[in-house]
Length: 365
Image (cartoon, rainbow, N blue to C red):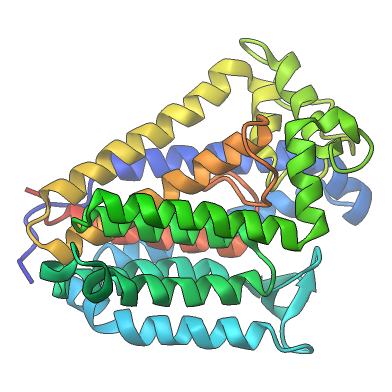
């Protein structure tokens, strides 16, 4: 591995700290009424978000100083551990059932989602595999079948929980890595079409997913059922206007909009801070993508380049899906907004992934 020439990218660090600050403020604002009613403590979720943010930033800075050789060495065993956890979480009595999905390992309010860490495991493994077999990437059977088959196996285990949102982000990230490694466009188009057909099959296999698609197309068809969450989200975004109703002044967070501090926090952000607040968050994500792609282009090693592209792709795919869901552009998938939504596993994992990006930025030319 080459020797580092620079300090971690200060722009990435500044953007992450700004997003985390906005996230903690909005988690408190969105959850205060619900937390006070349920726990007698309006800061219940905000305190936990700050704890996870502090832990994530510590791990981010720690990872940013490690030798990238460790990422290469642990890519295979790390993915094996992720697969073991994905199997373990499916065992009744071991995996914890929350919101209809057996996605958690842990005790009480504290736990981890193996599917979240599998996203990072897939990035490291595919980056290693594709950098070793770069000469085969343009052939499907010898170059793409094996890595995408492994990603597909992880997707199947995640869907057994079920967790369509995380699985979609993971497979989208895998396609970004394959593209960055130099795969042929015709192969990617074919894979994308296969993915659309598979998605349609998954939707048809579960009545609740059909209801979500129907609600996405016309939420007013079932305003008190499948379309309720999207309608309440639009009721939050609409009145926000240019400058919003004011921080803390959301109406929809008062038990109208379900999950206002997790999947739909962007709705509350738009309602309270308006177009300017929501636009600021989007601009920060755009700056993060710009710096991530800059790292991917300027690092001297293919393995490093693919990791940077994978991390950047994972973050942007998840952010686009979440914002698309809350604004009615995509069906509801149950996926968090990176750095802003409440959630320990998601926040910690994403900050660890940014730690990889910061680490590689030290080698950027």
